[in-house]
Image (cartoon, rainbow, N blue to C red):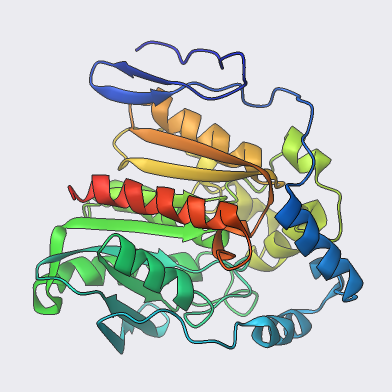
Length: 343
């Protein structure tokens, strides 16, 4: 297999094709001159500072959840043709799911989506806007999974729920009007971690078959020590201390972080995984982990596309009403899903 090449003179990733596989080139972990925050992100950061918003790591779990609820958008999300709430049996009790169905005929491809929030925050409600957008724009059905959160339910509880929900969707695809041969998993932040782990678990257990994985700035290695992590020291955005706060609640003990299902970047062999789109943000402690994983997938012969958005911070993907980069990132995600689903 050909080794990945080097970036061009502008520092961009190029694409190579070898033996039918799509590869990315990379200059991962290479120190670089950081660009300033792009204007819309800087304005948002200044708004957070002026509001007196405390850094995440200074909050208790309860305080962080109260703040998240208070910050949920008040306006209605864009409409979809149909929304179905139901629950399904899981290893720790009933798992709530919400099915978003756009206009279109059956059988419909489906994205099983796992919300972000550091495994501690997040909810089906908090992810509603992005689920609706992806459903309408692709178009595909989107199943949002209400997995168990830490610290009440540490690793691997949430992962178990996400895997079981994905398996259930495939097993019940025909009765739901879905196509069991076109099922993707995806999520942002902790949801991206869970999506990567579900894909690994599905490969390990010989099912369910997955067509694609959408990984948006995922945390992928509990013991990571990368340039992007070391540089992330701005308390007014998601920084390394906020990330440590999330990991401390997700893992019952540090040793659990060595499990590839908690830290997917630690997987020995990723060959055979479904194609992936990895989206990263320049000013994100998790940037290098995501990019290393994209490189690892490509080196193993997995079709992998990597897109880094400069000048933005962790969490930007969901802020399409505020940041132009978010709208562009969502459009790139939609394009990748369309290709994966043969649309």
